[in-house]
Image (tube, rainbow over all chains, first blue to last red; front, side, top):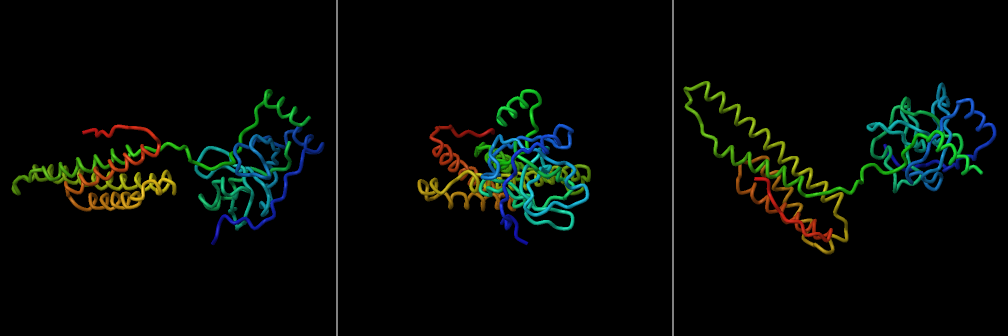
Length: 122
Length: 157
């Protein structure tokens, strides 16, 4: 098992669309602020993103998705990209691995800890 | 326009933060934590050596003796191991290649100190406990020199 080498294309996060804005207005999106530079160049510190908390109600996260997840040991949220996906666990990796604490350190995380998918950047 | 929107939103209802950095590197290091653990292990070593054996016939005194001895040994084991952990954190997290250039003896000093932690843990050696304290004092001197600060070495006991 090797962790930490992201073998997925670093897809950018789409900008805000009217549809997304509407979803946010009807509270189908949660807004988060990025704290730190582990997601550079895709997301910069203090970028705001919208997150779809119902994205993984039935479907599993896909490799390449950017997600918000609960840190495995701390009471904080993290924003990372999904690397590998296993039966009920996912690998979280920063787009900027040199400045990221992720599954290379804390291993795969249970999929229940994934809060939702980042759908757009404001 | 969108930046304006986020600015306004932040004032009305600040967004939750999703962390995207490295955990940890708070940059707070101090050889004092290793010194305190090593000092505790040294203190236990001295107490074990000084402990008087009771009469074999006096079962109450023997029970008390064994209890005290076990506690001293347990604390010595724990603190010697803690001292080693603290040293390894300093060695591997704080010290950088440029420090090694300035202090070529750095690796050997840490290796010796870590070995002494093991010796203090395994043995009941006042001499090795003292040598460990000396090694940590050396690390203290190098550590504060790399920070350009003159911090006086002291011990709690």
